[in-house]
Image (cartoon, rainbow, N blue to C red):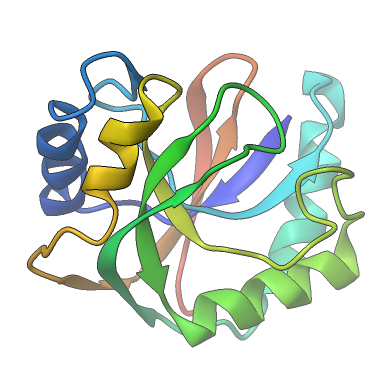
Amino acid sequence: MYSLNVPLPSAVTSLAGELARDLPLAEARRRGEHTLVAKRLGGGDHAVYANIEARARDALRGTAPFSVRITGVEQFEVAETGSSPVVYLAVESPELVALHERLCEAFDVVDGLEDGEYVPHVTVARGGDAAAAERLVGREIEPVEWTAEELEFYDAERGQWVSRVALPA
């Protein structure tokens, strides 16, 4: 599965790591594994990747850099896939939501993951003690703001970035 992601500043990944310490029974994302998915693009076959990237770049044409803001700690009590609960950093970015919607017009919606409302987020940890997750939700954090000036194509099967596209695209 390929996806188009927003690169995260170190302040966001550090915050996620700090919060994960309060969820000792959960599976925390390790350093370098935190992502902010703009859209899952499908695929998985490396031979098809060039076509996926070309289609995504066409859909991105005219996309300007945009603001992104981490606003708090929330959770999905029941995850669509994998273990629950999922504690995450909530993301506020109307431009990112609009970008996701535009990409949904160019690419199929991934069943079970994108057929509901898009909730931009950065996963802190999955599973573990529900009471510990509930205590973390709503914790006061210092908001983190940045401007997304590029997007990254990510290959989840191989766990690596494939390429990048600078904004404006």
